[in-house]
Image (cartoon, rainbow, N blue to C red; front, side, top):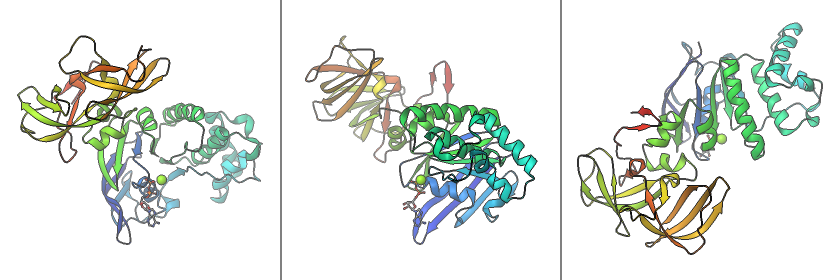
Length: 373
Ligand SMILES: Nc1ncnc2c1ncn2[C@@H]1O[C@H](COP(=O)(O)OP(=O)(O)O)[C@@H](O)[C@H]1O
Ligand SMILES: [Mg+2]
């Protein structure tokens, strides 16, 4: 069993707090993605787990053992970095087996583990090649192979795909998900890319300036972001968030008024805000639809940019009060730059954030037939 617990983990560099009281429970076999903007502390957290950094306070527990004072090599963890340096003069097989050789593992066992890892990663035909005769994706696989042969209790990945081109990143994402299933291993994966987080994670930890902003399953974060920060970070294109005022509060909804005067009922729980409060209204681009039927909550935008992507079209427009609004519509639409169009929000999918950027609690709603609390 390789569960991992972070308890009150704090890391300071002098007077600068890089990690501030981090608490996360990671279950055996869970795939956890730590996501956040550059500089928020992702690598520091992973390096602290690996034992490459000494934490200033708190505990790190792997299985039943507190490991934060145990040297990196004894923690039973293996890390794959963004900049994985392979030994240029060694073959793929030698690169993969090197750590085991240093550790004094018998040759027959090294060969057996290297062959098994190569089979899992589908790089068996490459075992005798040198790194310079490999593509970027193949090198990345070798770097993962080096981790797999060590049979770690937990795999740690620090932005391992960010040096690959876009198409290869998509392929490797799928490979990693398969690998996770095959190995039955606990994995902690760090990235600044919300798409990687959404597609691979069982659980996402959103980090902001050294603190945890929210923890949850991908769809929980997408549907119920706890703050404007998470709302803006998860989902692409990012959520539209514009200033508004609370116009009325009832048992079933809060009515907000946009600056252009549009009234929108948002089904959040009562008792969290009052008439007259300054708030932000949030709606994702995919929850806005072109409206020709005079829906009362529709508002007008002037189209600035049209991005036809084939399967969908992204419109960028401005409201009459100057806010930028992004709309994602399925298929092709007959809209050109300069057109004034009305867009209607899907009200159950809208959000309100208070003046501290915290989300008002939504009423529970069914999502794709599954109720998320
Ligand atoms: N050795 C160090 N000394 C001082 N500050 C550091 C050190 N390592 C990282 N930091 C700072 O800690 C913060 C988090 O860094 P890092 O964990 O690398 O961020 P991320 O991986 O999320 O981009 C940054 O502000 C960075 O400058
Ligand atoms: Mg980093």
